[in-house]
Amino acid sequence: MYAIVAAIIGGFCIILAAVLGPIVEHTLRKKRSRQGRGVKDGGSPSTWKLKGKGRVIIIIIRLTLAIAGIANLGISLSSWLLPPVAALDVSRFYFPSGKVGDIGDVSFGTGRFIYEPLGREPHEYEWKYNEDGSLNPNPAEFAGVCWLNPAGNFGTMSGGGKDLSDYNKIHWEGRSLGDPVNVEFFIGGVTWIWGKDSDGKPKIVEPPYPGVPKYGLGTYKLTSDWQEFDVPLHIGKADLKRVICGFGWVASWGNNDVQLNEDGTGPVEKKKFEFEIREIRYEKGD
Figure 1 (spheres, rainbow, N blue to C red):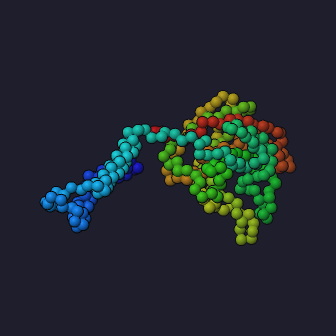
Figure 2: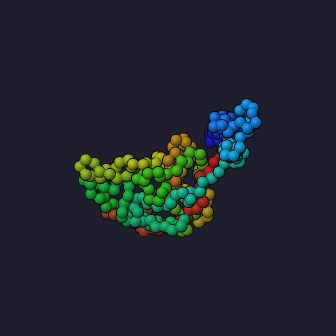
Figure 3: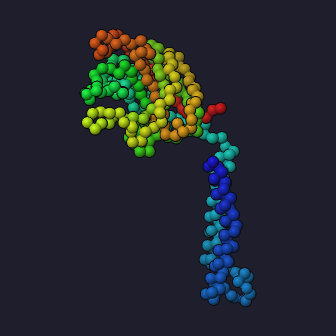
């Protein structure tokens, strides 16, 4: 689409460079004739020579239009002839800055994540509050991290997210640094935040600038060997127009054989999972 528009603009500018110059020249000649400076040796206005500032003005107009036309045609040709950008590096635009679930159970550095399913506060999920508005002390029994644009944006920042509708596949690599761990991966999902109802109690509401709905990429077992994941995005282009969470993972108690104790306050047995994720990118595939 952009290539077609550029081609039209380029052709139009080149035509103007050829046509508009003589028109302006004729106008300036007539102006000079009215001021008594156009006739030197007789003859009609069409034979009068334009000199000085008038000639410079015409040259500038023609050059400007010609350069604009050539530039736009160049953009158009490059769009048609050169291959499009085939991949978008998530780390350039998104930041692993949004924790979910039992936030206190997650810590991470560059590409390395540690998850200890202990049910530590704060708990950030749908059941964060009890019906009376008090905080729910029970663990969420899962935790995860979202790569957000901009960092820390859960739909409250204007202009957040990116249009990824040109991509139809996502790639990443992962491995465990200890025991195998089952991890669920996803994109999107920044569609709600905590607000208040008419009585002042916590209530789930839509954020001012929501992203696209959550789209699951699957649950996979990470082992000590690096694994590559390539997942087609069977999703409409409209559902990728405003992706605030460009990538995310969640590890749950249920998927990793972590049992809740009788008091409902923590696990029966303490476990620790450590894993790495790298090379996250959106791609254009067949």
